[in-house]
Length: 168
Image (cartoon, rainbow, N blue to C red; front, side, top):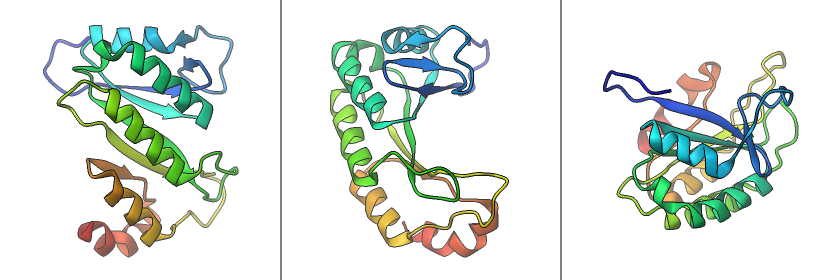
């Protein structure tokens, strides 16, 4: 993970209930617990994209972050989940609940770096149409966050979304 150049490096980690894995389909490989993930990204000076796979994983991450907050002081953090129902499996998240839990995580991050909220849809790349979403609800969540945020928009919908994105 450590790199010699000064570019931004992000470790994207799938966060499950109490453990992290590189790929949710591969549970045969070694998995890390949350404290180890925080320790590694802090040591390697790497940003962490925490891709939460269920609400319980997010709850456990908050509990660990409260205890190991010193590891988060200089770690750029992206808090991500597929909170909107798209053309894929049923979302396990309540979007408002996800943002509230992210606000709780932000509160324990003893850092000048504000976590980035990252909202996505459940998707199936082999199934059309791609999701386009309820823009008013999404804008409300992004504005409530009052910090940096990303949302996932399919290239198929980008032109249609562009004006709304520019106004947020």
